[in-house]
Length: 170
Image (cartoon, helix red, strand yellow):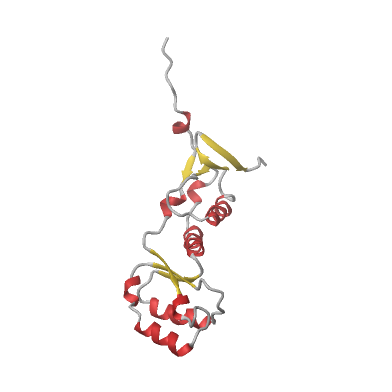
């Protein structure tokens, strides 16, 4: 007696949502300004402006740039703003923070612009395990975006998912 094996996952209405599919292509650069400071701590305006004017900003073409200072220096807002004016013609995005903040900002923009109406009343599984740096906050933002429309939300893989939310039957 032969019984056919049926793949119930493949036949279900379950929709898999992988945030990695939305990962923006482009180099990520952490631009640390500490080397432009006196002893890594004191910003001298004249020297800082000279270094900024002499720097080759074209190397950041199509990159995502996170401006940062890895020391305990107090950096005035205008310093980051000045660097941003040099980066603006080249970089895809410029932020103040580290690479995690950069990824969170990128995913915030992506998720806020997603059209999720096609997921209305469907069971959705949010894929985990990614090979790209998808920030934890992106998953929370995605939950906020999907919960009002999806029938249910799960996390993981179809064969071993963790239930997160199920719309109540009214």
